[in-house]
Image 1: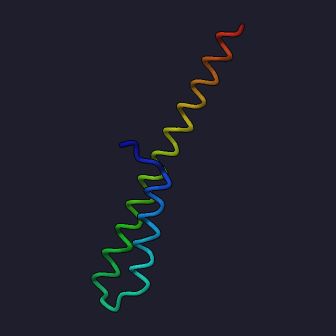
Image 2: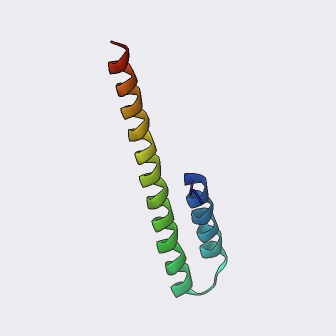
Length: 65
C-alpha cells in the first residue's frame, strides 16, 4: 500500500477535530501532538516527492542536451 500526503493530512484533521471536541486536557494534548506528527509526515513526504520530481526534471534536461 502506498501512503499519500492526503492520507497523512486526513489523519491530522481527524486529530484536530478530536482535540476540539474533547473535554479532557490530556487527551487534547495527545491529539495536538498526534496532529503535529501527521503534519510532519505529510510535509516530509511532499518534500521527497518534490525532490524526486526536480531530480527527474534535471535528469531529463541533461539527457536532451
